[in-house]
Length: 137
Image (tube, rainbow, N blue to C red; front, side, top):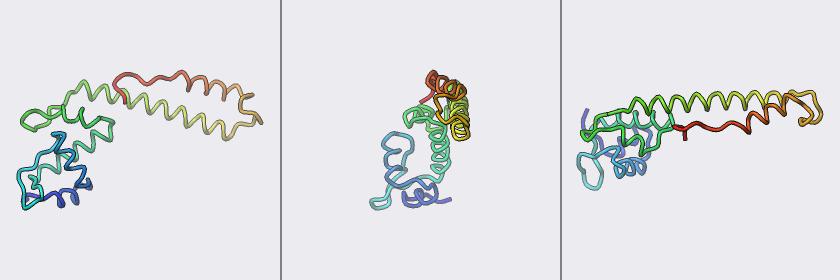
């Protein structure tokens, strides 16, 4: 595949050109030159952008993602950071499931006053006591 200008990268990746310029500023991607005023990228940038998007979806910050690339630009992913993020996602999933269950209970609770329902009060107390573990965002 031939080199891509910034508009082509934006079209193929679905990432706006403004974000691509910001990623370059942060050191996440690098252009290989210019064609007029447009930045030119190696086609491999699309794979790198996919990895960045995956990392963001998992909750990694751009700074955390930048640290996952070696000086040569190749991925150098910290497996401990992946495990910590997976643990944080597990906590989030459990927390959201408990919130969902609490909402469903509140919606179907036969008590006229939710505060009179022991199950609702227990769910409220449990939700108030949950704290997100380290490694999460």
